[in-house]
Length: 421
View 1 (tube, one colour):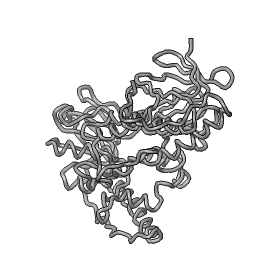
View 2: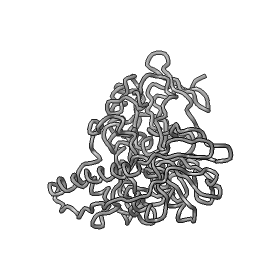
View 3: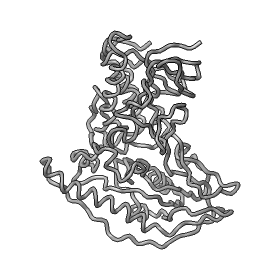
View 4: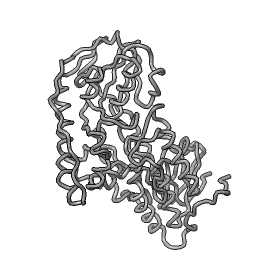
């Protein structure tokens, strides 16, 4: 027999917590389901992971960043702690350890959720599971037996991967960070390129991310991209490790990482690579030039003097087009993720797998989304942007239910002596 819940929120990351808080403000009774623990997606990062954006971006509704280092980069356990405290502060009605296996339409305007604790019937569902859940590997052939391969989610530290040389396939933000960490741990590292932008970590002692926020870069809508497929572009090459520093093809080359072009194919123990590393560097340089022009053109209008903007010098390299996999102890795929909404048995996603929404409202009545990359604007899924979307979604949920239907008081901060029980 199904449990009946008026509104179900699925996922307890920043999106689910922000939606829960805003539903409380709107007086909507609800339950938040989480497959594992609060902030599980952050817990799944590698051991040394740090926040790549500045600390001030930990800015969920009602609980802005209150630390002493807004331009710094906290380690992952502090991000998790921030979200755990947020959950406790606003007394989010969370049920941990409940995975949702499928979501389908039921009779009338209801939904049926198949969960690990049994079926749940709901009138409204808000999906906050994040856009990118399915690891992607390029179709370049199978690795030979005896050459282990892992995805980025399986990596924890250099000590946890097999001995030998390391081949990292994918040179976005994660690929560069893992390549640097492994090389500094004494491993010989090969990094196969992808197309990724890069940016300097700081300009005039202010994080470049902060400069871009000041000119509205993160408020750009989806149609600012050349095409919707731009949502799959890698994040900029940079890092928050060791206080934050530049990290891109040039810095990795100077460090001693062997840079390769795109993986072309695998034939036995021979991996071949396209000689296109120069094109990848040029792509990243072009994006950096665009950001430079944006800052130079917009910052004065916002009352800021434009910082000195460095120009990248020439990039020289000796092409390496083959790697003998006999010498490779492990292959790490950091080639990104794809949307993972196939468990929703309704036609509510586009050809790329992203939910179709109007400010979070899906084409199917009663079904909403939040925490989706570019759902409204570039920062929709981020710690400092998801709150704006959450408020819109909560208002839509409340208005769709009509007056007097299971309303509860708005959330209050818990007193220091209270307990969640």
